[in-house]
Image (cartoon, rainbow, N blue to C red; front, side):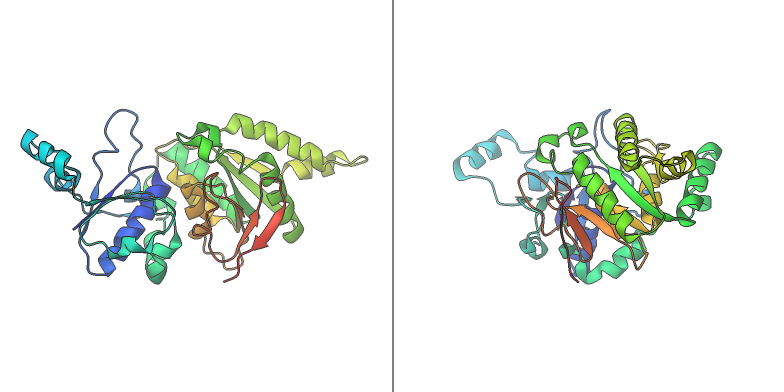
Length: 319
C-alpha cells in the first residue's frame, strides 16, 4: 500500500488526488494521510468534497508503519544502528516517473505535473467539474454575488487573472521575483493584442495591493486627448473579484475556470483553474519559471504562452 501525505490548499490537494487515481488505475492500493498536516487552528481546510470526492483515509497505525511514529525504545535503537527502512519518499522536483513504480511507500510532495496523470486526464477533467451554483446550496448573499459575477464572465470576453503574492506564502522566497508587475502587465498586453474587448477579472490574496496596481495599469493605458467615456471604458475592462475567503476560495477557482482565457500565477490553485477551463480556444499565460530553484518545464502544459518577469513573451508550448 502507498500512503500520500495530504497537504496544502485545494490546488495541491487536487494534484495529490490525481496521482492517487493514476496509481489506483495501475492496480495499486493508495490511501491518504490527512492527519499530520491538518491538525491545529491554522490548518487549511480539505476542499476536495466540493467535487463530491471521498478519498481513502489511512489510519494512525497504517501511517506509523511507514513513518516509525510509534516505535518503542528498542526499535529506535535498532534503527539508529542499522538505519531506517527506505519506505518514505520526498519529492525533489516536479516530476519523477519512479513514483508510479512504488507499491509500498509513504509519499511526500506536491506532484505538480500533468505527466503523472496524462493517460487518465479525461477522467480527471470529468471528476474536477464543479456542480452548479444551485447544487452548492450557498448562503443567499454569497450565491447572488457569485451568480452575478459568473453571468458577467460568461457574457464577456473574460480573462481570469490570478495574482498570488509570493510574500504571503510560507515558502515565499522560492517564488519571489517571478510573477512581477511587469509579468502581469506583459500578459495583459499580450491578451489585449489577441482578444478584442478583453475584460479582466482579477482574483488575488492581496486585494489592497491589486487595487493600486490596477489604477497604475489603467493610467498607463490612458492617452492624451481621450474622452471621459473612453477612460471609463478602459476602467470597465478591469474587475476585482473579492467576495471569497479561505473556506469559499473554491468559488474563485470555479469563476476563473469559466473565463474564456487565463493569466495564471505560479501556484497550483491558479494552474488548476486554467487546466479545467473547457473553452477550446482559450489562451493561457504562465510565468516562464515556476520557482527560483527550478524552471518548471514539467509543470507547463500544451498551449501555454510563457512570459518572463520582465514582461517579455518567451514562447508558446506546442502540443
